[in-house]
View (cartoon, rainbow, N blue to C red):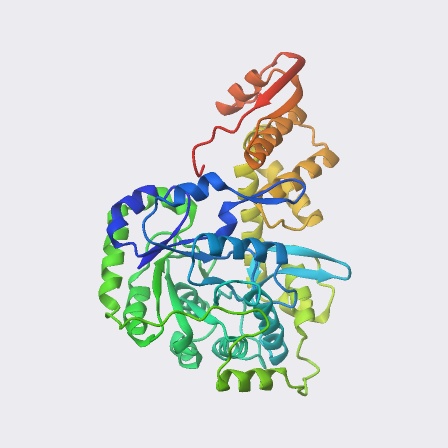
Length: 482
């Protein structure tokens, strides 16, 4: 039993420490991504995590393995390094895509999207899974994601698609029960049908989480505790998973302040009672690059899914699917017949709105004073118009720091009529550089920074701050995990 660790979870960890057999860490939360794209590990935060009880697992959230493009090798290398340092017995990533290739370039979608659920999509996903699995020192499991789109005629069912990918690649399965319940509530098909199609003997890990209703959809929002229906599902399915090794509760950082630690403790105890004691399971085999050990059934499925097949002319290729869906969710106009067809699905508008909210939230967290100044000077409607223009012109960035640098470049080009914007933006960027680089950053300003930050910190527009030449040394003194 365990939890997925996020910043601010200290009270929950303290209240459940004696119950935590394992703590799962998202590696991207430990990465510092600078303006030049270089990535380093936040050693201070990693060191503090050593004090958290339990063994360690790693769960990727930004380098999915379900699309045509193989996972980013830089991220996979860092993933592998952390797996070794934390002695993780296995790691996991999402069976999805978040990157679209366009000729010689590519863009991120800002959201993990469902892959093409056709035989060709299976082959693409198997290649992607293997690309990551063969570069890792430990076994890899893939997670079934939430899918808000309507089912498409002619596609493989969700269960059949996942089964063929798992068996074809030889990987394990992370069964997020909230994801599959959300898919049922949103019309993808029943949970029972999905479970009947899955290779349950490949499920190594289960996730539990809460969600919420939004615009007629049930969102996989990771807010609050699992509801009674999900807990009933867990009680039904956990005893049926012979290879299950870990059950983890997930929550998003924004929901942590409202979380009752005693309620999380009660949840872990309740779920532990659902999961009968099992005889010790054998250790998972350590993969060897290029020498993956597959059983006879897995070899047969691999051969079948790799064989040529007669494709219906109306069935999209994985590349066509990813381009159409990816361009739509980032707000571009449909430019293919498939894109025009997908645009009729109301989930496209939902995804566009969620991505815009995520991007705005990232900017509020990284460019705190700049965003406050914009809101005070332009009001909410003006800021929304500014962000809408930015979102149309610039695709989403994978990391919050990259989003901040891209938006800063946009502001420099757009030059909105906002007083003191140049100096406030320089202050925010200096603070961001100090945080990412782990050392002080010096910026030159034309306005008294004390007056600017005092007024903005109090939620008001600066009133005639002194002008002049100011050189400021900025140091990151934010609290751990803040």
